[in-house]
Length: 637
Image (cartoon, rainbow, N blue to C red):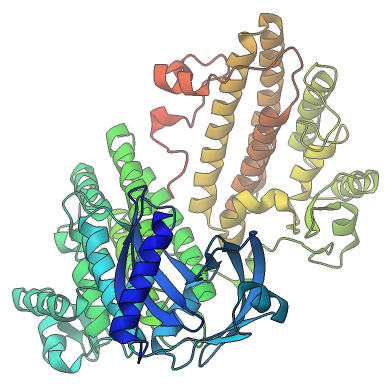
């Protein structure tokens, strides 16, 4: 009741002061439960009021778009409403409850409102009559831009300093200048902040005068639209400061550090500022920076593709860096920590940047800056080469990615999208076996591999752990999972089974593939250990049985290693493919460990205790040659 009374009092007050013009204003609502909302609002026809809440405290919603009614409705419902602005016509769902209609609007609509001369809400005639509203409700836009920007500015300060919650990207978007930042006031900034290295080639040069000029730019124009980003980079305990400190520790631990320490300095904040106000093309700006700025339409998909490319480059350089650290566990752990802190910082940055071209374009700058530091510390390895023909394509909609009969014989389609997975049909197994009879892959080590697999498969299929499913360690028949491994020697179809190792498959880079091979073997070892200890708490006999089965699997896996290494030595397959297949074998076996049925009773989840107590050192299987004692992390992203 108090909420309605406050609303009626607020409505009367606004009518008495602005009823002739219906100007947008800023307001604050404090509810009985102690929650507070800051909003821009305007009075509308039929004694209603439109509120755009942009931040709140002790409330569920960060923002909302609500039309308040003069009285409560009898029953709650969900209706459709068309919302018109100058440039858009969208149909939105709205929830009618109590004396309010809450619209489920997206950010793009809210961003269009400040700059639109028109805002109309069109209701279904029946809904309009029930709610006591006109079919088309015209909303006055007088003062909308000023009110929304003022509220956004207030909310930014409240979220930074007073514990309010908000959508950071939305607030920054509203405050972002329409025509980007004014570079005319900073005409000298190009000369102050860049250095020519050869004709028409410039680098970023953060001198004291450059830093002072960029600080002035931020204080004059950046406060508001860049406030959240400033805090992320510069507050004492921010994600970036944690990354920065960890990076310095990693550099200090590196066995080989280049003489030019400038390669390892972190000037990302100032580089970001220069990208917004500078005019000169510098080497620190990747081509993707200009691609995003010049992109027509929503840049989301383009930015996503660029991030994916950079992730593969990071995987390449970091895998080389781990190897360069030799046997230093401390150094490798420091790299792992630094990369995880970077990932946390970059995730926060992407969440708070507005979906505006100039704002999104800073992302590849910051990412490339980090990549170059890793690249230098790793000894400047060759970059990753990408070819569109090599990119992993997952078959969907019930369609294979090629017209080859073999792919159709070996495919199964699942889910609402008809996603493609490997299936060892009898025709598939027979076709692969026929190919191998006359293939250069059919060596004496291959025949030894078949024997090791058959020994393992026979024992597994007669064990209590076998189940007739696609996720079984053997597969849908005795040769199923071996067939997937052998098929992958000479074909890469659209199987979802390859998804986890798509970076290796798409890049075909030996460093990336080797790193992933080690990682997935290590993951399998750990998951097996967790499963074994869980079962040992239930039945010692079953645990012993599983351990014996794993010994047979390891005999097969090591036979696979010898077989693949021999094919590489004879130049029959490239090194990357050998590691790709090793990764695939580990992933298939890990899935089997995670999914096999065990009916004695529900297993205890001991993985958390093992991690706390360090019991993963007491491994009952062959000690993992790639485990954490060698410093290789589970993942680096």
